Image (cartoon, rainbow, N blue to C red; front, side, top):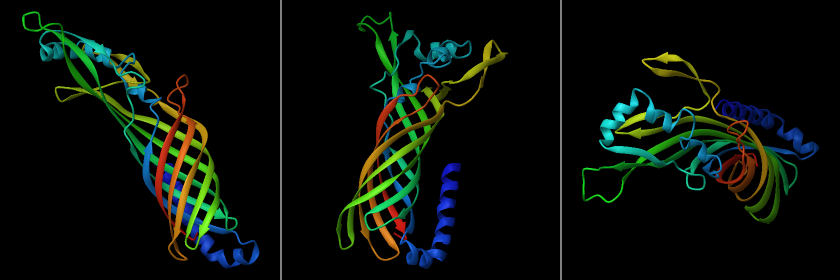
Length: 282
């Protein structure tokens, strides 16, 4: 969020400066400054979603066997029970998330522009794992019954794209363009937990035991999972030039980049995003 505020402050400050110097720029090299706001959606690949499935040293299995939780779960399930399966890679995925941010660039001529944009998203996961329950006292039950336990994750992600737009079609107030860009992204895990009987149980990541209390380890979180990743991508867009002040822009991007959750888990993958922009000064 700090990155977004800084970027928006930069583009608005630059806009004021650009307005004051617009006449000078037009008389010299014709370079034109523009800026805008983005709002849209992001569909992230599921390569890192498996990080939220609860399979950590202090995750689902740990919570099921702590000295404080086990009696609670014994009472809830009533009969013999066991964790059957956690969500697996390929099945667990992110929900489509909002994608908002800022945009600024320089129009070098009628067909070429350079730009930078910074977008932020709040990614969420909702899946479930299975608990097998065996009731030996019920002769009508053949085998185990299963209960689905909901599991949730929340992640913040920012994407900085720096690239070039090339117009390939123009007709009066309409334009179409290709864009190519480099990407720097920053990912942070914010929350991960499962719910049983309306109670939240945290799945811990990057923690270290810090003593014990009432027979249970006191877990202290270190650095939240996440980090910086790099990549690139391409997109396609269309603009409607409303007047000399406002331009409306619809843009789709495909980004292939590395998403870093930890030093040994940083897969590459493709993500898709689409935004609507309102531009000033284009």
